[in-house]
Amino acid sequence: MDYETIKYEVADQILIITLNRPERLNAFTSTMARELIDAFNRADTDDDVGAIIVTGKGRAFCAGADLSSGGDAFDVGAHREHVSQSDGTVDYSDPNLRDIGGELTLRIFKCMKPVLAAVNGSAVGVGATMQLAMDIRIASEAARFGFVFARRGIVPEAASSWFLPRIVGISQALDWCYSGRVFPAEEALVAQLVSKVVPSDQLLPTARALGREIVEKTPPVSVALIRQMMWRMLGADDPVEAHKIDSRVSYTLGRSADAREGVMAFLEKRPPLFKGKVSTDMPEYFPWWTEREYK
Image (cartoon, rainbow, N blue to C red; front, top):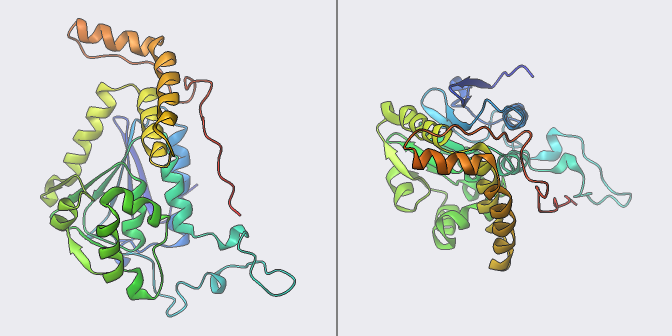
């Protein structure tokens, strides 16, 4: 796919995805959503990608949905064909009615590679919620965040009612969503929405350094499994579910060449050389969950 709204650049096993509509403050469109989903699909199948950084071009990360269509900007039925049942009611299981921001966030949630957000400026609405399925968020001092849905007459989207309270707690999530206020990076840091705040000129170097540490010191198969174990156990109903997966993964990886290499590199005081690949070496029981049907 040729990209119109994003840039896709791989160097030293780090993929940088840049939201690339600076003249519109990287405002989110259905085209951007489709391109981002394609980029994550592409990254998952590329063993040369060990970590992903998402950032924005210009002075915004993403200023939210593109509102240039006016008052019906959030009216899905006005922009897409949809199917109604014979009695005139809406068929809510119709894929055409799915929240495109949610489709993107769920795709990021399923990603096999670690995902870092380098938040360079304003991140409002979907510009904030798309980050919630990313693993680590680093903000520049110029970053601003806003879950502004109530002020637009709508509700949180992109599955953020699942993600946001798990990251910052229910009270903080409701404070931000009820008020719809835009807040600075320091407030995001205090609430642990972001892991650190750095000067603007240090944002990408900081994100790259973290990406390099992951790529150089950890095996891709372990990282892919850790990512899914951590995220999916947030929804488990009992810790025994984590124990089941821990036991399976520990047995499988404990016998792997990567485990032997990790131990020997430590004992021999040298950098490890991991050879396992996500494309070919995931365990036979992966994935261990059943995908939920949208209906």
